[in-house]
Image (cartoon, rainbow, N blue to C red; front, side):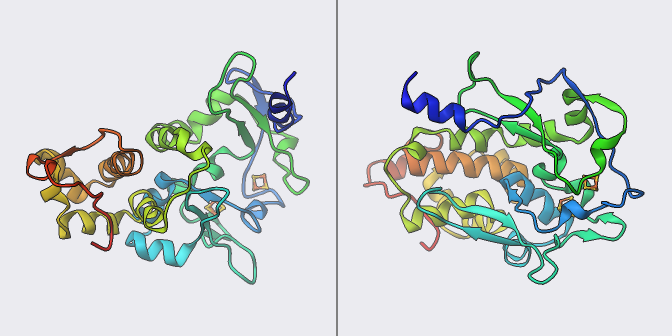
Length: 270
Ligand code: SF4
Ligand code: SF4
């Protein structure tokens, strides 16, 4: 077996693998002594759709939400901005946990919905390296001791995971681009574009409508109207803009009046 294949296999958790029709028992409710113990001292990476849902539920502008409730890092290794939920610096608790439960339960992030299921998701699943689920067992969590038996598929539906996966499909596809596995890195300006178009949606909206953006790109009127108010449409559009700007894909169309000029990607700060 080749060395790179061995490395790939050793990265896969050594735990029983679950498919969507496999079942497990789990019970989580306020009567358990561990209630909400899982909501502290935890690293929760937020997807763009997580940020969209949370800022809407909290009625915050995305810039305010990101500043108040998240930390973001940009490392050479990861190449792309990572946004994480900011735990309270003293108690290490999630900002949304209360004695009664999660105050953003209806918009809780994908990672919180999945727990206690983990997902091993190869970039290109194959028969020999398939996508699979596994149970995360932590000593403090009493939920494995009982409860109703559910299949993985039933759990994902009950927790609303499928909608999150559907809304995250374009982002996942963007992250599968060969660029991220290459030796290339984003410039600081490109990193700012990524952060804005994926996470700071209200700022991205202002950028579209308050810069020369719409003079440069052909966007049909119905879509322009949707971009004014619809965050899901805006996120989808942002992903297309990044594909155009970072990878030179024909995801957006330049207006003919700009075609003959030496086209520079329009970017925040212009
Ligand atoms: S059962 Fe597990 S998931 Fe539920 S509250 Fe307790 S620690 Fe958290
Ligand atoms: S968002 Fe809700 S479920 Fe997730 S860690 Fe915070 S309080 Fe817990």
